[in-house]
Image (tube, rainbow, N blue to C red; front, side, top):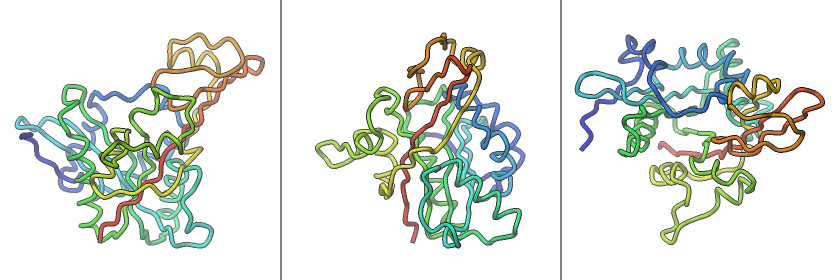
Length: 249
């Protein structure tokens, strides 16, 4: 049994500064989505009651998860956005700025300490996000999910990949399977959930790959090929995600 304690960041605000120092497995290029760079910190700071952190017996951080909320039942919305993660973050930021009451919680990420991988913590952490959202009064939790095995098949259509199931009916993908076991259902694909654009030198720095020829570039960790335009000295990564809905009522 895991000897850990889960708390919301509202309960443990003193840990907020330490959360982002935790070693994890995120690829460097994913840190360069301009929407995330501009809005992630300010938005999640306002939803500490939805963010969760796990600590071990020594009170060291072993995992964390972030979530926020926005109004989905509003003019111009009501349908889940194709731009997924980025659009959800923009909605939450706009609602905070205008004082719009949120009606839907949205999970943004779960990160596990590199020393604690493979122990089932992802299930624990998303369960904690579900509990936090329910306690905060939300009846629905959405998540633009980044399937954990999709990077192994970057050319496969995301909808085809997400619908694959095992003989027991659960998704083949491990992270989608965690969501399904916790009650999540696939709503639709977010084909342009996050976008990362950079010069070829920037991409070389982020990945260690020689971006020199126009065409698709296969970057470890990327869920789809990165599109390189050598004559324009730019490469663009558009990441597809899977919208999943959790009923908390």
